[in-house]
Figure 1 (cartoon, rainbow, N blue to C red):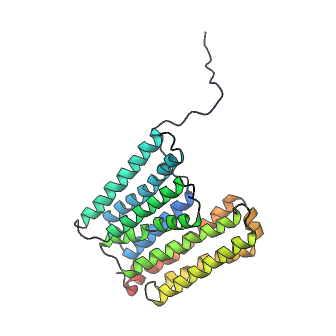
Figure 2: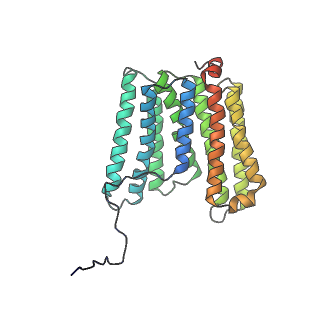
Figure 3: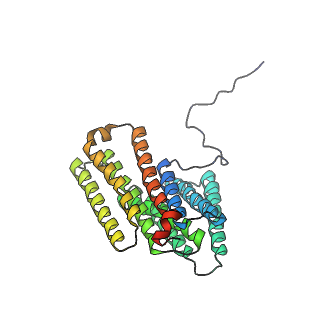
Length: 284
């Protein structure tokens, strides 16, 4: 006679430790990919070191997720988070060390990128511990850290860096950080007036545009990548024009808008940096 085992009702059991922990932040995958490809386009080559840099950037991003989950549930150690955080962290460290070794263990610009990424991770961990991960400052730092994949791709491929590469990092950081302000139009803080949210978004885009103009006028940012920033300005103007519909729209169309405009921005910037164009900008 067969017996049926009934599982008592209650809290669902925790996933097994061997089940992968993968970040659900799909938008950040787009930021990482576009920024990295812009850096690779600026390098005008793709080598084994470029692929290793991609592994380093991707695993570094993935390592942050189990770390954040463990900090949020810090009352007890979670083997699954520790295992996968350790695995991602080890792959990040090994690939970073491999890139550094390929460049001769000297004073490589990679050290600056590694240091900046480490500082950003520590700031994010502290913000999570203090329940301030969703603050504007912390999100700006996070986007800037993810956009370090642009100079990482360039430096890993070429072994050098130029002021233009840092200009491209600033361009990517300013472009993708605009999402912080448009998303917060949909999710206001408690008791915050809609006018204040809109004014904050307008102020950000005005300041970001001024920075882009200054970078271009200083010769740090080529003209076409600088003009590619108009994609985000047009997107913001469209959101402003249809603000009520934007705030009430399902997340699917909003995500599609963000992804489409990001790919358009990335495509314009990358094409302008490819060898036939980039050599005229001092990149090749």
